[in-house]
Image 1 (tube, rainbow, N blue to C red):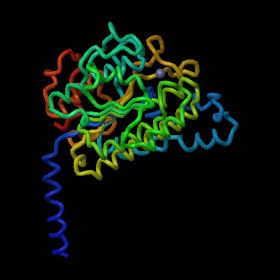
Image 2: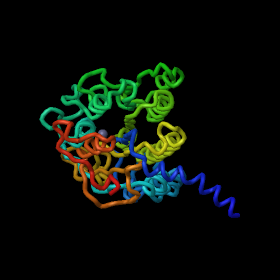
Image 3: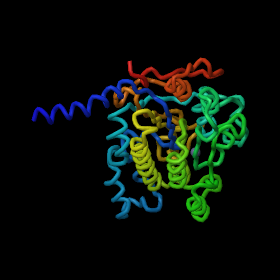
Image 4: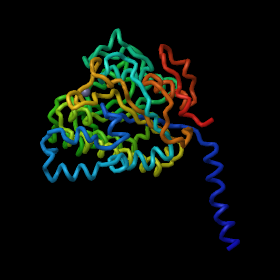
Length: 349
Ligand SMILES: [Zn+2]
């Protein structure tokens, strides 16, 4: 008995010491486009469960199944609430500060730490006017192009994510990834109803394959279908895509923890670009005139993150860039033009 206990201590000790010394070496940012706080914090919305999307016909067996399967936030997002929220933190009071509350202004605010209201007024494909945090981190950490990567379902990230085209590795929309020929081919013969965005499942599988081979220090994975199906008023699909999103996060985290390059040295940040309406009339929509479309959420987990769970502390979308910079041991004030600041609750005291 005594011998067994000593042996166990011997094994545990180096792990504990290593955990104490650990700091964030890699940052992985994941977004789900227009994923409402309502579903994230409450599970299926009883109001929208009456929404007449094809298989959400209130009388159908399928609708009944979904109402049961997604009844609570833990059943809709099991990884998010049972693992991420328990080992990290979830901030429920996050505001978008740009006045448009649509995707490009939101992603730009996430990636540049400011609202660029005078230039980015909507989703028009104009080149990002400022150096993004992705470009800044590549420069400051002297990383090669392949170590700062972005995978997105929406093709507009070629404009959104870089001030100088070609600075970082971007795979966006129906774009081939030469090292994954089968997925590259399949995504094109499995189109979505939208020309600008591929299915999130392809974005995820390509990003995961890239993560394993190229081992980027900074990775941004952007999913889109939670927004696309909402605009199509398919609440049934929105719920299914939220559940998919949760399973992507689960597989991503399992992979991270299985790789020595990432295990215990990677911070995961999960958020959204904008909120949406909260009534039967406007839940499918968002924008400057939709009440509540400025309310988003943010979750984090990693070696610097306190296991604080759900917090009411207020923060803003523009705070994400300085938070990422600080996490990687750099000085946020070296990044010029940001108006946000690092989120205090995101760091262990
Ligand atoms: Zn949208």
